[in-house]
Structure formats: structure tokens, C-alpha cells
Amino acid sequence: MAAAHLYPYVVADLCLGKPPLPSLPATATVADAIAALKSVQDNCISVWSCDHSSSRRNCTCVGKLCMVDVVCFLCQKDNLDSPAVALKSPVSVLLPKSEGLVRHVEPSTSLVEAIDLILQGAQNLVIPIKTSSRRKHLPKSPPSPLIFPTTHNGQEFCWLTPEDIVRFLLGSIGQFSPLPTLSIDALGIITDDFEAADYHSPASSAVGAISRSLARQTSVAVVDAGGMLIGEISPSTLACCDETVSAAILTLSTGDLMAYIDCGGPPEEIVRLVEERLKAKKLEGMVEEFVLGPYSSNSASSDEDLPSPTTPLARAGRVGRSGSGYSARMVRRAEAMVCHRWSSLVAVMIQAIAHRVSYVWVIEDDDCTLLGIVTFPKMLQIFRQHLKPII
Image (cartoon, rainbow, N blue to C red; front, side):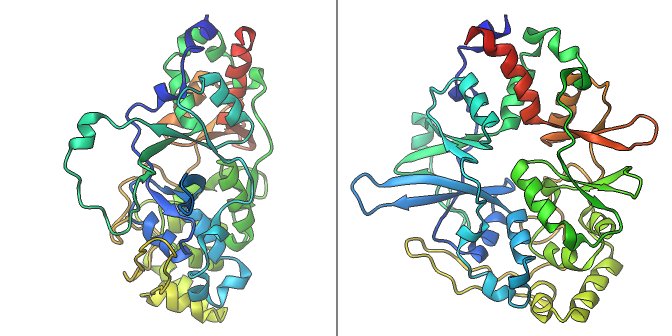
């Protein structure tokens, strides 16, 4: 019954109301990416490679970026002494090396085909969207100097994520009965393949784990010596910070970093501690760029008029996209979202969607020992198997 109900749906049905993607040219620099990320409403921005030399004027989305990509890049050893030079690097250094994370698909692509692409590793499906005739004639608002056009060759695009598909399936969850009521343990979707860091370890030792968890759309579990889950370092939380959080990662313990990026901003004493430790590590470049501010970039793209950021950087890790205050989009703290092995599939789906995460940690009932993680792709695997008979 579920297959018969859902099989006619195509990705265009899931794109209704989706906003067009703001874009950054592949010719931009890291500094340009920072400026653009501080100007968009979402936490990420699409990167496009456009060839206008031929009559076909080919434009392709080659990836997406968020502030975590920038932070992990700035924390690399080669960039510590000269962050100003690192900011002038091409934006391509921030793009994940994995292929197939972003895929162009037609609006007529079926829901089942979209699920297959997600299960093959795609994180974002780029889809052309129709612009209504009424919208075409509406007066255009002056574009922000830091946001690039959302059209490519006159066409607007949006993208779908695993969250969008899981949310859509949740709307038809009754069609899958009794599957939603089964436990995640019985369904076999708990995995122990996840990133973890010790609470007392240096946060800098978790940079690789943060980068890998971003690529997998999960998080880094923060545990004690006994394996009890204390919290997490979430890429989605870090993405709401600005680039100055890289200084905190280089100087604080994992536990202190959790406090630094938590809602409300870091305590003043932790901010002072970061500055002192940067100086002790002789990272004067980091102090100058991320503590004293301001910084500037003389970068310019070959085919785009890109502004250079000149706003002084806030000393706190938690900032709004306007450069001051706290992010209005932050809806969760460093505490991790958890469930139990006996939790039902539908309960875990609702929990993840309600908290805007693509995973939920699984813990023991008695001592909060971390057992594993349940992710959106694992959930989609189950639904895909349920749809299989009709395909």
C-alpha cells in the first residue's frame, strides 16, 4: 500500500516553497566564502562553476560550504602561522574531496530514485525550480552586496536533503504500518561507526573527527573515560559560529569547547584564556586576525565582483550573521539528542526532525553509555526496502 501511494511522487513535489539557492562562484576565495556565509539565512551556500566562454553557458553546482569547512581549514598546521594568507586561498580548498555529495537531478526524478541517490552518498540534490509568472513581474529587491545571484542562465535552483525526504515520508508514515512502531534495535539500524572524543582531550585533536562528521552529516560524541555520553561537538552548531571559533579549537579542551559554542556565547574568562594560550603557542597571526581584528582581503574573482570583508571580528564564538548578537537560527545546545535501543522508528524520526539534526545517539538505559547512532540514511534504507516490491 505504501509503495502504491508514494511511487507517483517526483522530486518536484518536494520542492514546493523551497527558496532558490544563493551561490558562490568557484573563483572566489576563502575570505569571500566567509563574507557570503555571514550574509545568507541558511548555514551553508552552494558553490558553482560556470563556463560562459561557449554558447551553451554551462553552470554546475560543484559543492556546498558551511563555516565548519572554513574552521577546519584554518586549523590546519600550514595555516596557523599565516591565517591572512590562508584567507586568500581559492574556495576550492574548502570543498570536500568526496565525489557525488552534490548531484544535479531533473524535476521528474522519482522519489524512489532520489532515495537511491541519498543511499549512494549524495547529500544534496540540486533541482531546477519554476518561477511563477507573478514572481517574474514582482519588483526586485536590491541584492545584498554579499549574496550572489540565485539564477544561472536564467534558471533558479533549490536542493533537497535527506531531512527533506525523511520529513516527507513522515507525512505518510501511516502508509508504512506496522514499520514505524518497530524499535530501532529490531530494525537493525543502530551503527557503532561514529566519531568520538574524550571530554578532557585537546579540542584540536578532534579537528579530523569534526571534518569527517561534517562529511557524513553526523556529529562528534563527547564521552568520558567510561564511555558515557556527555555531549557532542556538532557541525550544525559550529556552523552557526564564525571563523573565530578556530582559535578556541586550537587552545581549549573538548569540554571547554562545548561551553564555548553553547547557546548564549562563551564566558568572558574562556575568551581571555583563548587569547592567552594563542600567545603562549606563539600563534601571533591567529591573535591578530581572530582576536584583535579587523582583517581584510584584497581578493578578487576573475568573473565576479566580490566584496572583501572588513567588519571587525567578534571575540566570542557565537555570533549572528550580521556580525553581532547571537544567531537567531540556533535552536539547540551542545547537549546531544539521545534515544534508546527500544525507541520506535517513528519516535526517532520525529525527534531528529524536531531538533533539525540528521542523527540521534543511542544510549544505555541505566548509565548513559553510548551504544551507537541512528542516521537518516539508515532510516531511508528501511523505507527503501519497504518500497522495493513494487519497483
